Structures are given as C-alpha cells and as structure tokens.
Amino acid sequence: MSRFIVASGSPRRKELLSAAGYSFDVIPSETDETLPDGIHASDAVARLSKRKALSVSKENPSAVVLGCDTVVSLGGKILGKPKDKADAFSMLSSLSGKEHEVFTGVFITDGEKEKGFVSCTKVEFYPLSKETIESYIETGEPSDKAGSYGIQGFGSVLVKKIDGDYFTVMGLPVNECARVLSSFGIHGRIKF
Image 1 (cartoon, rainbow, N blue to C red):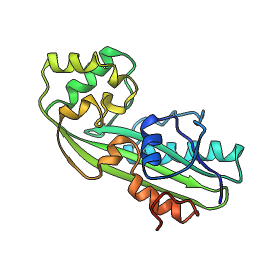
Image 2 (cartoon, helix red, strand yellow):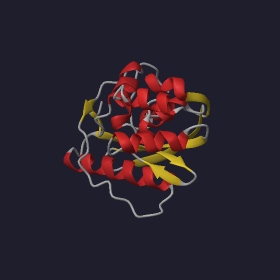
Image 3 (cartoon, rainbow, N blue to C red):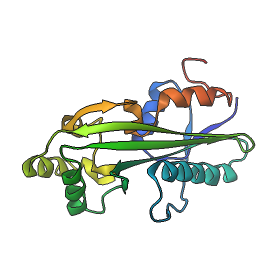
Image 4 (cartoon, one colour):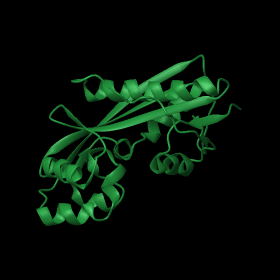
C-alpha cells in the first residue's frame, strides 16, 4: 500500500481522518497562498488545495497526498483566518444573524493521477450580541479558523442551522474523501 500524506497541519483534519481509521503522515504544505483579487470562494479552495497537494507531492513522489483548504464566504466576500481579535470581532459581527457559505476544496494526487473536488455547506448564525462575540473571542478558538469560528467547538452555540455536510464546515468532507481515496488504493476502516 502507498504511503498516505496529509498536506495540512490542521488538528481537525487529522482527527477526522483518524476517526475514520486512516493511517497517514502529516507534512504541512509551505506553499504560497496568495490569490487574485475577486476570485470566487470555490475557485480559491480548489486552487489552494491543489497547490498544497502538489507542493508536498513533489517532495514525496511515491506517496498519495491530500491537500485541503477551507474558506468562509459572506455575500461573495472571502473571510479567511482573522489577523487579530479586532478582525475576529469584525468577521463575527458580519456573520451575526446571517447565512453564509463554507467551501472546502480537496485535491488528491499520487504523482500521476489527480482528483479534486469542492464541497459547499450553508451555515446560518443566530443574531450575536457584542457580549457573546467578545466572550467567544476570549476562548481563543477563533484565532486560527476561517471566518473566525469553529463549528465543532465553542462556536457550535453560534450556529442556528446548516444545509449541507457538517464535515465540510470542520475543514474536511471526510465522507467524499473516503470514496476518492479508495480510488487511489487508500482505505480507512470502511472499504469502498
């Protein structure tokens, strides 16, 4: 069986793949994440996940490499990770009481074959008071999350409803990944 590498240092992605029974190595990609202005969120995550996977694959040509990227989009504007607490406050205020989209791009390659896809989930927040936003920011959770929140942690209480795949919001649509990985000969506990 081929070596399986995840080109991401995300603890959530590691947790999801481990829970599904995958054995893998983690080699975070150090690739440039600059994107052109005005790029659509789905194109952004498709491009970045491919860039990340290919950069790690180049150094590990005999491995199957999975690259991922997740962004939050509100009204067509991409919300990445916050620069600081003020930026997190601004993002969370903009999401308050509104529906937004979370896009996760996945790209898998073995150095020859390549397969990528993008998953989108709609998320609606409850209206959030200043006190709620500030207390959430004080948990420290928003600092490394796209859109300044994590649905699987303290941020779960901000979410009114979702339409789509919960795992896409966490940063890895593991259900669809499992099916694509099987076409590369990589299997978790459940075989497809």
